[in-house]
Image 1: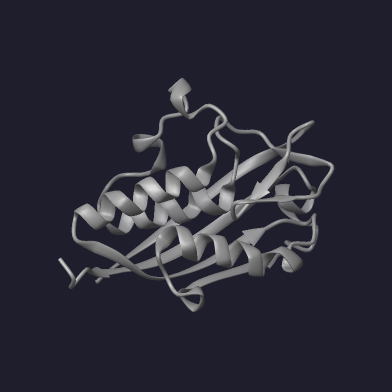
Image 2 (image 1 turned 135 degrees about the vertical axis):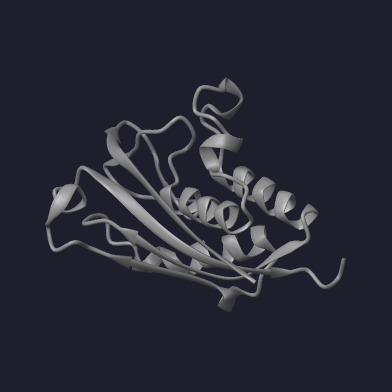
Length: 160
């Protein structure tokens, strides 16, 4: 078994859709990024890659490569999953936290869990997503952006 941790942050940007956990969240701003800016999926990818000893998301999907400009982060997640499966690993479970003062995210978490569990070939109870604020402290509290943390447990795939 191996444990990995991931973290990502993006600043808010006007006239951009807000995508978190693979879904569009109604909000006045989205996140500035080379891809779709999905900080939750980026943190999960980093946690998985870290646990597998495979560097980080920027190494695999560099932000100076136009092939990834505006890309749906769920595509990146599915590629990361395929990569670790080839190495003989599978995700056992994920615990993640989105840090945002606004918007309120709890109504969207069930759908996020459903999509991400499908993308990672997991039972839904193996994908935990929490959302919290920082009580108006720091850049997230000032509503300048959103951050996410993820912890993943990998285990050897016994079907190989």
